[in-house]
Picture 1 (tube, rainbow, N blue to C red):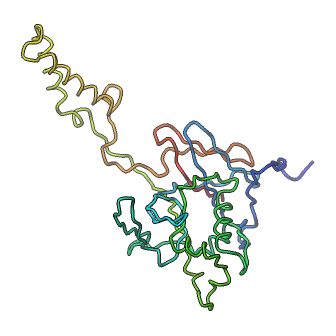
Picture 2 (picture 1 turned 90 degrees about the horizontal axis):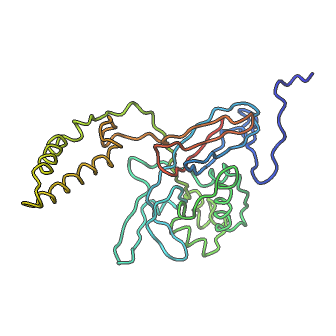
Picture 3 (picture 1 turned 45 degrees about the horizontal axis):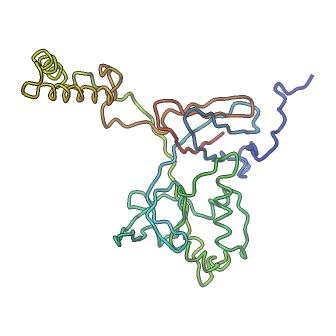
Length: 305
């Protein structure tokens, strides 16, 4: 009889490479909680394979979007992104829209200067390069590694680089020409910014029907009076009745099927990530599902420990 209570299942073939457990505390990438980036869509179960052959602890963070000046094809625009590689001089960058209006966008503020040095991000993603590697190849390989299985591919509009990187990619700069001690010395000024977020949520305050619709009783009385009074279309009574009826229907659409349920108060802070279910599908696969009640799609960072 085998001493292993749960013999490991065969490792799946194909591009969906499972996450290696590594050795705890060994200092390698495999020994740490490696991030997996997924795009959850309502009605689908997204899977993350692993080689732990057990039930790992799963942590899920929503990827918040933020504004940044991104450059491509010699054009700079203000974009809403989830991943951004930039040079320190582009922490505040300028872009001009089609109408000639100039916008200054800051990805760092006095209260929020957090980022990951690009060199550390490359190590995290397992990107290999040397001093002769062109900056453009490093950036392309980084995006490819970041969104390779078991992560999902992300739309090109969800990530970008700053104007400084675009210019120096075009100049075919090498990593070696940017190392500390060289004439350039800009390598340590390259950064990655992305914003995983999670909240701990208390019950949201609710509003009763009377709180939400203080005018509802009066509207219903007016509607009944107008319908009872109406003979033909005296004094526009029919038009008034229709207007009141439309307002009552708007209330129902805005607050629920009959407008009588208690509902979260306006402005209540939603949870992040909203309505995500984690499933331990088997000894080597975790599942993630976006439940009803949230948006149609949510981008998340998943950590398995």
